[in-house]
Image (cartoon, rainbow, N blue to C red; front, side, top):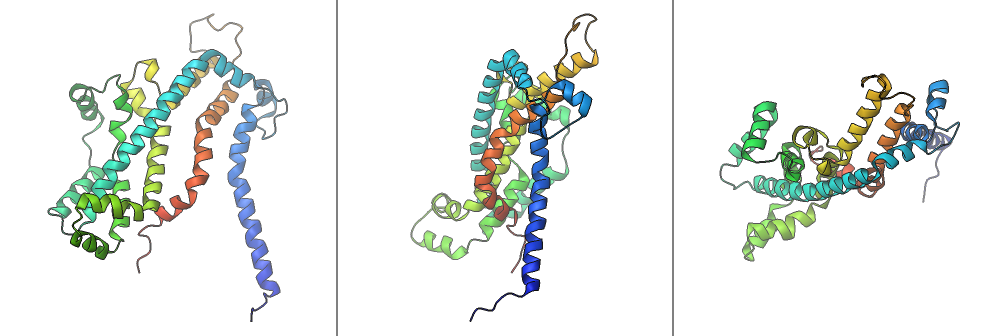
Amino acid sequence: MRKSKSFGDHLVTVLAYLFIGLFGLLCLYPLVLTLGVSLSSEREIVMHGYSAIPQKFTLNTYIYIFANSGMRILKSYGVTIFVTAAGTIGAMIITSMIAFALSIKSLKYRNVIAFLCNFTIVFSAGLIPWYVVCVNYYGLKNNILALILPSIFSVWNMFLMRTYFSSISPSLYEAAKIDGASYMLIYWRIALPLSKTAVLTVGLMYALQYWNDWWNALIFINDKDLFPLQYYLYTILSNVNAISSGRIPSGAAAGITLPSETVKMAVTVITIGPIIFLYPFVQKYFVQGIMTGAVKE
């Protein structure tokens, strides 16, 4: 017989939903505010401040951005999409293979390899040696690979995947080995399919990393045709701020009024749009993957 809930239980449920709903609205408000400001006029922002609901709706900011740099933005979108796709796939292959190998307890020098990976988290050679190696030895200056290779492996992501691989029953591997399967076949046909949660979680982390990256472009790229979206929009914003603050030759900006505040918000909307649409599809896997190894039974 099903036990009916008491008034106190219903009250707690209602309060919980109200709290979650309010918290969700608080999380959503910055996005709505960003969109609202980007659709407002610069004059209204200066006079009345930020508002989630535009007091004077206008697309002038987006028209300004795309009219002056429309084709460049599309090219930058293409570069970013390619870098994100290629980088994520390459990073997942490398990371998952190393993680799977380190999850095999019979691997020779397993602890030594794990220690060397951990060592790179704590100690680094520094920016200048890293730059010299990448440019002089790897030839990454003005090379599309400069946007992919420096970020293609994350030790933290590798250990996250190793923890997940380690949770798979070793008896599955033993049964496959008895049937004549190699470790490569075990990795491809058993480990990866059973680790979909970890794969999607780490894949999302790599995708976000590549999508939001502008540092590598700042360091290695001078060719505008290779500018990723984040870095190109950063240059637009820097130029607008420079003109608005007067850090340009006298008279060069006479009579020009640029939407500096609304440009910031419009740039944010342009860059985060695709990720916002992607995230809900992998959110549940992301949460499950982050919790991997958090609870020990």
